[in-house]
Image 1 (cartoon, rainbow, N blue to C red):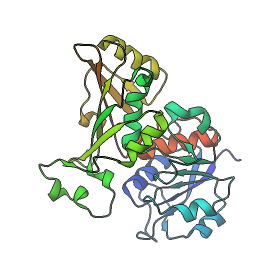
Image 2 (cartoon, helix red, strand yellow):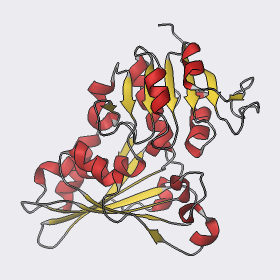
Image 3 (tube, rainbow, N blue to C red):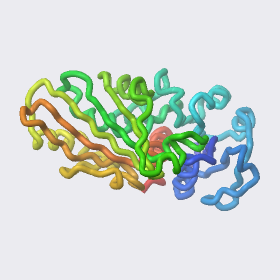
Image 4 (spheres, helix red, strand yellow):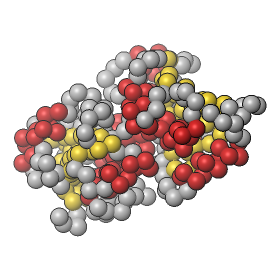
Length: 306
């Protein structure tokens, strides 16, 4: 492969697609050769001079002989592209379509070795990213399923009109939804190897995400031990920051990585609560996709991100 890799983004119009185009426009080892969007076909891509959106089917994408394709499509839509693209071409799928099969699961902080050099990578969900990073350092101490409250901006509901991305419906409001069996609950359960209970909500801001994880422990702990365990787990992770203070949802907005803090232990030492925040469109989607792309292509992991 060459030093500069040819990359295409299918689904470049959406919230995540726009963030991807912005990040990739500054990537020293990537040349974006395709920005797929039926709705914007023929219009210029704002972040990349000389590139226009195109409406192309799977066969046409394959004909471009790209080194990598990022699928930024809704769940259940990307199969024709995944099937058509050569097995030697890297695919990073941002949808949930392959988070439960034999594709490599792309949460670098917990799965970096398998992602490196992989050709089929399933990008984690936004909630599942923050949730797993908050809980993972304590999995071996858990006494039962963690219970996680989550809230995100309405960009997480996508661009198709719905009550969960209607600013008027969200005004001065907080909307719970899918209170059992949410696919990010199943995703985190699968990849942590431990049952998780998750309750998502959407709030009036456009972006940003917060999870509060309450965990029951088998043996008593304290706040210093919990904070120390988080610090040890993520000491060398450039996109995870650990702090003692409780982060707020606003702290995660426009954040490149994940901020984890507020490790608080109950009086009996057996109840632990941890808060994690991120931007649902960045580390929750586009930044993580580029992280995975970099690992797959063998370039520095934070290329284009920093």
